[in-house]
Structure formats: C-alpha cells, structure tokens
Amino acid sequence: MRKNLLFLFFVFLPISCIRQYAIMPTMSVATNPVSPIEHNFTFKELDGYFLKNNTKLAKNINFFAINTTEKFEQFLGFAKTMDKTLKLPDFTKNIVGIIAMEPSPTANKISILSVQRDGATLRVFYDIVPTEQEIGYFILNMRAFEIEGQYDGINSITFVSKNRKIDVIYFECNSNSFPSDISDALKNFTGTFKGSFPYINGKHVKVVLELRSDYTYTISQEYQTDRKTYTTTGNWLLSKDMRFFNLNDIYGNVWMMFEFIDRKTVERLDLQGRKMNSSLYRLKK
Image 1: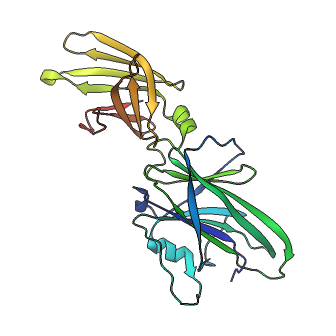
Image 2: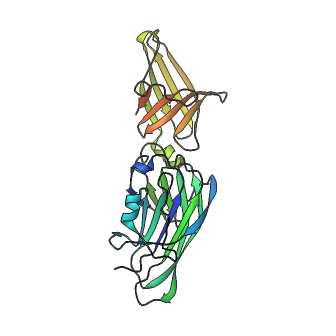
Image 3: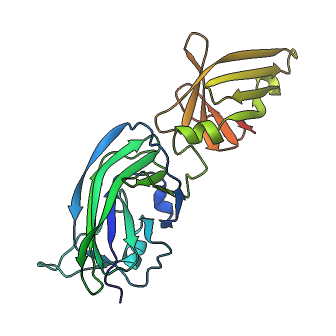
C-alpha cells in the first residue's frame, strides 16, 4: 500500500452546476502571469482522511475535483480518530479538491498561501517544499482545508504554485459555456455572430453582431418590413461571473443584454437579464 501519498483537499461553497459531474481532469499551463483578483477567501484545516491506494496518479503532482459523496468515498478513506467520527462534506453546496503526489521517501511541507476569485475562476495559491528529512519508508502527509465564500458562477479551479506554474480544473458543465477568465473571454468568445430575431406580423430582423477583443462592438439589424439596415456601435461589458455581457450605446446606457451559451453561441435576454425564447433569440458564429 502506498503510504507516502501527500494530498491536500479543500471544500468550498455553492456552485450551481458542478454537482452533475463527479471528477474532473486537469490541464497544465506554462508559467503565466496571474491576473488581478476580485477578493480573498478564508479557509480552515480539516483532518481525518487519506487517499486510497487504488487512485491512479499520472504525474508527480496531480489535481482532482470531487463533488459527489460516491466519488468522495471512492477516492478518500477515513482515518481513525479519537472519537471515531468524521463529518462528510455537504455536496449539495460544497466541493472537494485534491492535490496528490507520487510516492517518495522524503517528507514534504505543503502550504496554502491564499484562495482568491478571478471572474469565473477560483485560484488556489500553494507551495510544496521538500524537507531534508529522509524517512526511510513511505509516509502519508495530509492537509485539508475548508474554504468559505460565495461561489456562484465558478466554472474552474486554478492551482497556482509559488513559481507561478498553473494547473486548471474545468468543470465539464461550464468548460465551454462561458469564459473562465477575462483572457479566455477575449480570445475565445469574441467574433462575429449571426442570426435573426422575431418581429411584428411574423417578420424577422436579420442580426449580425461583431464582438471585438478591444471591448467594442458593431451590431447590424436588417428589418424585413422595410429592408432597411440599422447599425449601432459602442462598448460591451462582461458581468462579474463572465456569463453575460451588455451592449452599451455611445452614452453608456445598456440597450441589449446577452448570455454566452457556448463559444459559438450567444442568446439575447431582456433588459432584466431574463430569458425570452431561447430558440428564437440566439446568434451563432
């Protein structure tokens, strides 16, 4: 049995759609600058669990996200405690993250430096420092943290090491539906979207929306009633959770609101952010 697996797991509060998926893979990214954050979160240490020895570890350091009790019990076991009781995470509102290392006879010190939110991404800043202590046998080191905060709109977790190596876990239900951060929005969610909106007497309005990475837009609307085309330009603005964007006129007033459905589709909403008729108000690249 592997006894030197070092892992860190954490729990955080409500995420609306990740409960549909049990465990998500990670994507490693080259060293990158980390963008400004919205706010920090507090966290507390938890004890009493170990990573089961049938867990496959493909890399030296591995990252996972678990959001169901079934998967939690599949990957994590309960260590014996003084009172022989442990409380499971509440997966109706929480999620568990794991950092697991390959076997080594050297002890490692793992530290969580901070937990921060950046748009739709939760960033966990961590550090792992090998000690000079040679154990001579495989050991189990464990650190667990419960993170407190509001997590609506989160679609990924980014683990950031002290030297800025980045590993990203995308939640499957949102991985392509709306941007994970601002750079993702500007790179992958901009472009030219086309379609039509319903109009009076069964007529339609042909719409072409050009969403540019410099936060400007042009929207052209051709009305079937008189065959005239009306073009408007201005600036567009992302919502904090990256799921929606507004079209502002030259005076800064919001006159259209959209939701990202995926990288190639946007849907017009009413000015209160409510859906009208999904099948009739979508534009596609």
